[in-house]
Image 1 (cartoon, helix red, strand yellow):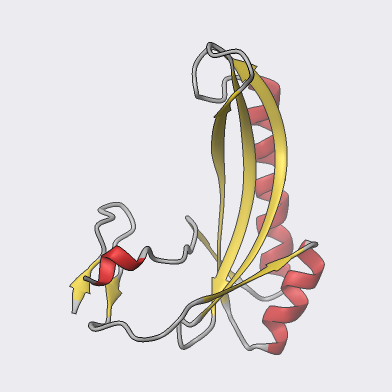
Image 2 (image 1 turned 90 degrees about the vertical axis):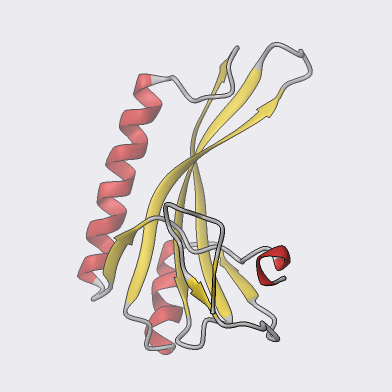
Length: 137
């Protein structure tokens, strides 16, 4: 067994890794929940992350808050993901600083957690991701 290099959300991975992880993205939260019900998946991860990218001007960044809801099948071979952009702002630093956007993101995260819980899903923080192949060598 090896541990991934992430200290905050470390996971134990089988070694050597021979499988291929597939990612399935969903256009709506309702469709995501419906598919998890068919696959008998009982827990999801929910969180808001910030993505920054430079604008055409070298000193300005577009900063977007994105809601991610992710789940894995029982074998760990399929990653289910729903992503929703929540708010975008510009800043001279690569970080989101708009208070209204932050409040909107928090409210949306809470409402989404309630909807997932009412659908019978156990909601955890964080996000499942597809591991980078270098974690297996």
